[in-house]
Image (cartoon, rainbow, N blue to C red; front, top):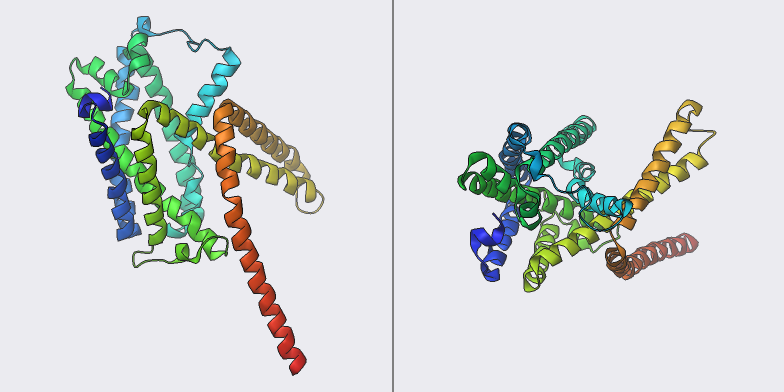
Length: 343
């Protein structure tokens, strides 16, 4: 059951539903962090429980005749695995985002790390088992054309269409909950940059609910523009392009973080790094850099090209604001020097 089957082929209606799913969590963010947390808890339970049921009960209904070829892409196995890994990473992007909103979390030293590790392990387990179940519940030919594979898998178990409808509603709740957290995150990043003088000061303003309202508004407006662009063209093609570009831009910080770790280890080997942990840290940082580089390559030439253009587009903003900041600091230093000379 795809979104077109649920709502028809009218792109205006589909775009209106997508906009509602964007602006409802934006409204929760405007209300404050308490509302954001409440919406997040409810949406997480609503989406996790049905997926867990599919990942467990669905395993007992698997039909091996439904399985397709291991590599149906027509490409080489390494190329197909790299492309699949780039798409898969999109599902796990944001695992590090809990640290971005740590300022809004109680006892972040304890809760952020625990939530990141336990959440990733639970999600990975449900995703892996759920994917295995879907592959065995839906015939390969139908699965290739499916717009909602989990809904089709539930229909296969239930023997009707009501199960797929429930999963579709759960998917909507999942989307709203996901956007609820991402909007908060997207507002926190420019907020932090604005406080450091690297982004317009307007983004550093905080409302009564403890949320940078202008950042939330900017995120919602940009998301609205992307929705309009998406439904103005082929939605499936636009979605795949956005997923790959997002994967590329998400891997760049991973790559640079791994490189920074290697730099820190090389610079502080004698003074701050214990010899017993040096080999382990070098191995982890090196593998992280290589893995990030491999994922960037798996995103494809077009995604890398377009993602680099997006990154370069931010350089003028950084240069301008950084120049103004250093100019203001220099002016202040000169004024102080003149006052001291006059005294």
